[in-house]
Amino acid sequence: MEGMRNVDHVKKRQIYIQEAKTQVEFACRCYEAFQEAERVSAATDVFFHLHHFLVHASNLDRILDAKPGTDRHTILIGHVDLTGIDLKPFRRLRNHLEHFDERLDRWVSEFDGHAFFDMNIVTGAKGFPEKAFLRALDGETFKFLGEDYNMTDLYHTVLEINCRLTTVSSGC
Image (cartoon, rainbow, N blue to C red; front, side, top):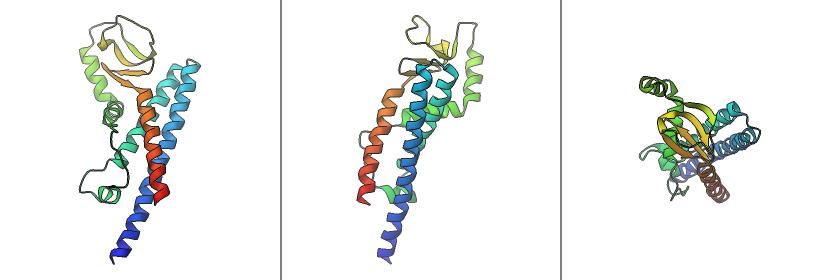
């Protein structure tokens, strides 16, 4: 019976690992599309692809960083090394975007007529208060409601996770 359980865990782990790899692939495709949109200065597409990149990156985090005591945690523990990786700040940004209506309500209630940026590429803009940025891209930094998120750092983290997943799947 114990041998059957171990085989069952291996198969289940493979399912989680494969889904994590799918999320990596989707995140990378979105990031590449974001870079192309940025290259051609298609602002709406920049934010469209960044949003989807963040969704897939946070899905990756949610799949692999399971809550202790859950079946998924038991299946994955000790098999995927996430040492030194923290996607939670980006999960926070994804949550902001998923609950955008609530964030927008707060931002509008605090609006005092100041200049503001929404879905703008503002690289090099200086002198604006943080409250001016609803959604903006400043170089590699996604600015949202006064918080800054480095997209290149997140992309490199996704690539690092992919390397670790490749190591795990070759050992399954």
